[in-house]
Length: 112
Image (cartoon, rainbow, N blue to C red; front, side, top):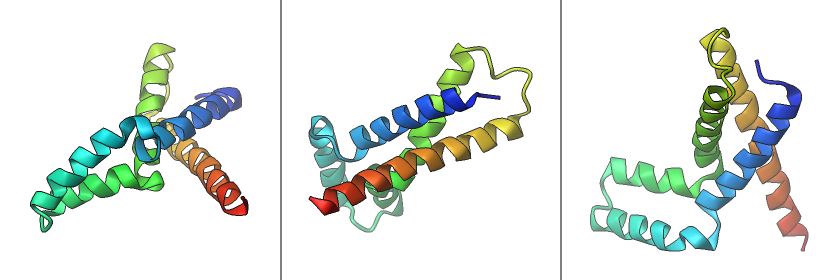
């Protein structure tokens, strides 16, 4: 099981990774290409789901945090010896913490 320090570190990384996927200008060309791809077949549920995934902090954050947690657990050799269900709870806790950071950041932007 990961420690609270690891959870905090991974939550910060998850927040930053989510910002990268959803908002940062460095990925604007990628998001524009995906949006254009979706516009060629706007009735495609699959394409719509992909656009939703990359434009929603909740959707992207969940998967970004899952990927970060998996890599962390494998690199630090914490995957083995812990029930998979515990890792599932870690994933939910991590995604929740990262979303709280995103919500705080969004609320801060509204104040300015």
